[in-house]
Image (cartoon, rainbow, N blue to C red; front, side, top):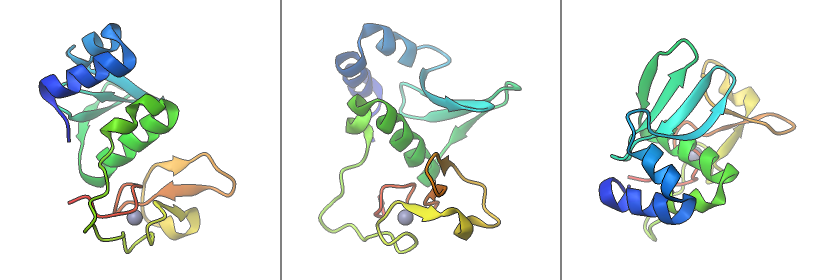
Length: 134
Ligand SMILES: [Zn+2]
């Protein structure tokens, strides 16, 4: 995970000085948003989700990767924030490396749903990258 000065430089090069300034602000750089919440990237590499009622919480683990993935789908310049698959990485067993699952298999889970037909959702085990990142 890139963070700190390296992340700031990456954002400055890919998205420009205004975005780098937002990254360093208290709120962070807006990554993407949907109904009722927005996701922000902080200079330390943390991702924060803020609901419309103002509740803000850090997003960790596979869900953090999902937020980066969605942001990179919308702004391809951010692909560089995604982990590169190491040669020895294990393919995710839950999604067989697909990164997504059919919505029907998501019963009982709350997760980020993709805007596809039919609806799919990002794999909660790998965050959508298709392999075990750690
Ligand atoms: Zn998976």
